[in-house]
Structures are given as structure tokens and as C-alpha cells.
Image 1 (cartoon, rainbow, N blue to C red):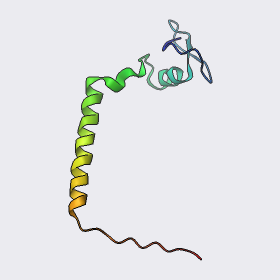
Image 2: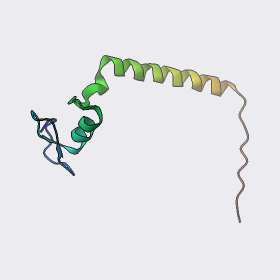
Image 3: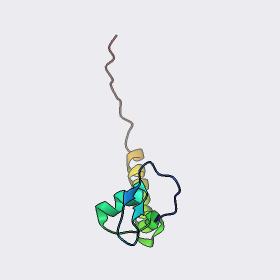
Image 4: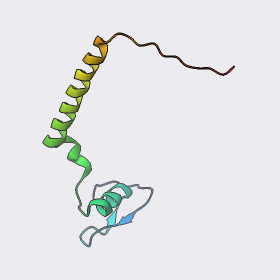
Length: 78
């Protein structure tokens, strides 16, 4: 096993040095042809990207709040 899980809905084939992979690692390996753990979530590049996304969303929220509220018409069937 690559990531250390003990249970998986499906076990997949991997490279010769890691012949048995869990479903998630096997799918990722097949797509990228690399055995990287999913811990890239906390990599410096990912953290910076999430921070920029949050800042952009906050800036967009401030712009939307400054506009006048809009009326929304929803047709209902009786």
C-alpha cells in the first residue's frame, strides 16, 4: 500500500515498486503516472493559491454588497 489505508472499495495495480494501491492512489497514479501523496493540499503553492482565491472572493463580495439589492421574480405554478 502506498498511503497506508487498510480498507478501500477497490484495490488497483500500481508500478513495480508499489504493486497494490488503494482506489484513490491507483486512480491518481493512472491519471498522472506519479506516486505523490494527496498531501499537496498543504504545499506552499496550494496554500498561496487558496489564500489568493479567498482574497479574490472577499473582494468580489465587497463589490457585490455595495450594489443596490436586486429584486428576484420567481414564477410559481399553482
